[in-house]
Image (tube, rainbow, N blue to C red; front, side, top):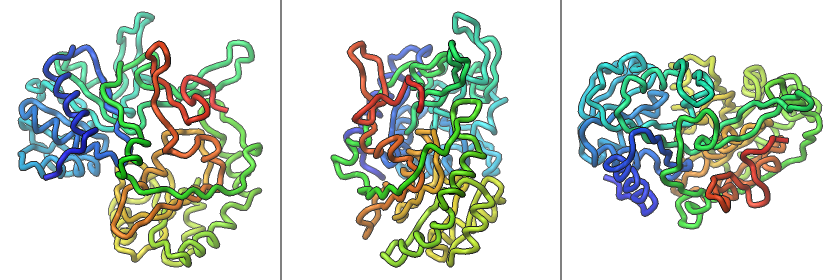
Length: 401
């Protein structure tokens, strides 16, 4: 059984208060940074409510993590997930959204729905009228939730925002900006219920210190794509090639090992890069979205037990991957996504016995673009409206440069 920290207990108390007295038309968010123990908040809230609770998560890995925390309190629950080959509904049910999206009629007893990684609930695929009324449900979550109109919904996420594309009214040029979920239009979640700051976790000694190592990078080589939300694949590939990022990587990995670093994840841009680099680096391998599940599980197991010392990673292992011994992160790709940036660094900030710090080697200008993650805060302006600030400038609600 885990004892709740003060900020976790505050989040649970706010959740229970909303469950008892809140309006079911509201959909609040708990902001819980990576390493804050989000799964404990979910588990304790579900245990206290005890009847008619459904916990939704996007993957079986997250389901297993949340379910194990819940069981640590000695409580019983069911699992409904095709990936785990379990389809049972109980008083408290942990489910993957893909497995229940068409089964709202089976969950009419549910009074509280907790959505983990709630930033993945996408109103962009839903259709609304000018007054914000839903015309057509496009997302799995919306299709499911419209069948449970009286259930109260609470979302939890470490990244309560998303990129949204716009067009400049004068030039018609596309651009993107970071919108907080409770401020975007159309909106699904409408307010913050509780916010834990990353800096708060550091001040209380709950996160592993980060040692940032930014390297020289020429951002001027990059071109924004037509959506305005990321750089073009070609400009990234050209910039990586011109600045010899992949040429430098094997030496950086070797130097890291010589300095006593035991477990390194390298975030690279393409599968071809990952394959080529893994071949050049001793005791290494790679994973991507194309790696078969059984192979990915074997590779991750070998990485965690030390057989694989360097893992090249393409667009996976950013959400729900917990390996506290991870002591080195190398970012070998640029991104305009604040969420991806925070998720990449977040893999290494959990403490582990004998781990003094986590080194983050940024080869592509991401630290300069977004700042150190402990500087990123959710603040309210004079009108009480929330924004993201990096200590020097506002990051949300403004075009990304």
